[in-house]
Amino acid sequence: MTGSMRVLCAMSGGVDSAVSAFLLKQQGHEVIGANMRFWEYKEPLPLSPPLDKGRGAEGGVGSCETPVLVKNKLTSCCSPEDMADAERSARGMGIPFYALKMEADFRVNVIDPFVADYENGLTPNPCVHCNTYIKFGEFYEKATALGFDQIATGHYADIVHLPNGRYAVAPAADRKKDQSYYLYGMSQESLARTIFPLAKMIKDEARRIAEANNIPVARKPDSQEICFIPDNDHKAFLKREGVSMRPGYFRDRLGAILGKHEGSVGLTIGQRKGLGVAGFAEAQFVLEILSNGDVILGPREELERRTFYIRDVVFQGVAEDDRAWSEGVPCNVQIRYNGQPLAAVAYKVETPLMASLRIELDTPAWAVTPGQAGVLYDRDGGFILAGGKIRLVPPED
Image: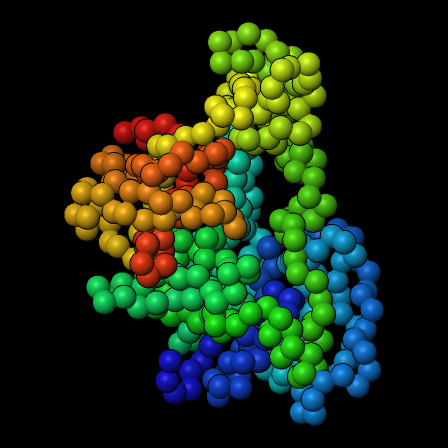
C-alpha cells in the first residue's frame, strides 16, 4: 500500500475500528469514518465511567474525560450509543463522519436468513452473513460508488495476494482475536480494495495506542453478543419474529420416545444441557433436529463424523474452476469460531445450482453442526481456500 488514498473506514463505536481509523490517518491517508446502522434499539443504555483524567499523550484525539456510551454487561455492537461513540472518536481525530442507514439490507441479508435457518433446524452464523453481504457487500459497493480507493475495518485478519493472482483472507497475528473464519465470503473485488490495519497487531497493543492518543473508547469492552440480540435470548427474539417453537418429542435413533420438549427451535447439534431428560445410563446429546420438531438424542460418540458437505461455497485462494478440486485439495478445515483446525481433503461436488464441496477428515470430528461455517485453510500458507455452510447430507441437484 503506497501513496495517500481515500479510505472509507467502518467505525462500529469500538476500540478496534477507532484505532484502525487513527492508524490510517497517521499513515497520511484521507480517512472518512462511517457507522452502519443495522437495527432499531428501543431503550437508551447507560453511560460507562469516563477514562482517567490526564491519561494519554499530547496531541491525541480527544479528552479522556469524555464519557463513553457502553452497555452494562449487554455488550453488543451497532446500538445508537455505539454510533455516538464512533462519531465522538472520529470527531476527536478530526476526520469526517457519516451514518449509513442499512436496516433494510440487514433485515434481508442477515435477520431473515438467521430466522429461516432456525426454522429449518440449522444453527445459523449471522456474523458470516453480515460480513459477506453487508460490510464487504453493501458497504463496499457504497464506497466504490462514492469514489473511495479502499475500505477499512477493525477486523483482526490479514489479506494476502497469491502467486496465482488471487486474493485471500489469512489469519491475524493475534490468533486469539483472529476473525478470518467469518470472512470467507469476501469477493475477489472487495479483497483487492480492503485494508485491515490491525492485521499485524495484538489487541493489547491496539488498546495501548487508543489510551496513549486519548481515543475515548480506549477501555470500552469488546462486544460479545449478536448485535440484534443484546440479551442473548435467542428464543425470545425468534418468538418476536413469529417463529413457531415446534414442540415435539425427544427420540432415539430407532424412533422410541425419550421425552417431550417445548420446542426444537434454538437447540443445536451437540447440546446436552437444558434438555430436561434424565435417567439414562449415558449422557444424552442432540444428534439431529428433524423438520417435524422431533429431536434425535444419543450418546456422545454418535456425534463423531468423518465426512460432511459444504454448500453455497465462496472460493478465495483457489478458483472454483481449478481442477485441483476434483482431484482433492489437502487443507485444514475449521468448523466453528476458535475451533481447532482439522486436517482434511476437499473435493468439488458437481451440482447445477450451487457450488458444493465434500470434506473428508483425516480423523473424525465431534458435533459437526449444520448451518455453521466450514472454512478451508491452506495447510502451508494458512490463507483461506474456500468456505461455505455446513450440511451433513449430499447437496440436492
